[in-house]
Image (cartoon, rainbow, N blue to C red):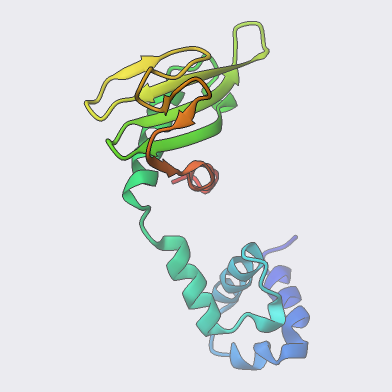
Length: 165
């Protein structure tokens, strides 16, 4: 779709809510950005006011919390070790209260299939790659693999990777 037609189309869609009249001072690129941001957050065009847009933009640009940033950094570092870095899938990202990052990462193996590995990036900056098991005592405890105290940041890490952070 042409860059000239898209803002006009969005404006027509928002006409029922009177948003085009409110946005007369905005250029087409600013309007397009506003409606794309609202659509990304499932806000209908007729409800996409400049105030709501500003709140959503602030939320999108907010810095990651420390646990998510730590897990994201570890996942990106580990991604470089994969045979096909583009195939990485983060199944689990968990940060313990001690600062260890526990990751369960899927990636393409040499034969083209998927392999899942459990890895730990310790708070001391060392990697432990355990294949199908966690590093004993760092991520889980007991026979049933109950998590040690910490925070699950899987969704936040996947969202950050999706957004290219």
